[in-house]
Image (spheres, rainbow, N blue to C red):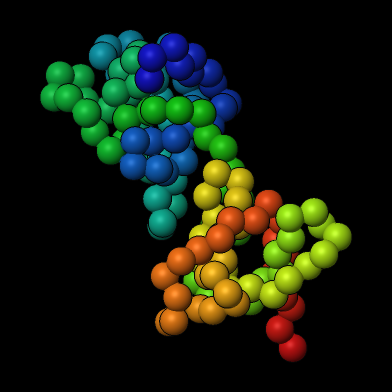
Length: 133
């Protein structure tokens, strides 16, 4: 939370990875920041200290404000072993089975195998899902 400037109307991320929207930053008392956290079943209104802490004196919490929000890449929701096409140059495409997406790379199981038969993975810069019929 060091050097994080919290502004009304922006989205932020909790320590445990949930999305936050901020309504106000000029409240009185210890909880001057007002907003809501997006849980699986909807938004919950919450207050934070000026520093972005959920607890005033009790230490860290999973709902502390830790960074600005960035929308997850669509590949982060792909299922393991999803059939995809992979490429290093967007010209030549090869078949693969999706493992995970991390730091801008799409990882597939090595040698065209699946999670059932292969532990090793290889990262590629480009990937696109195969449309199943």
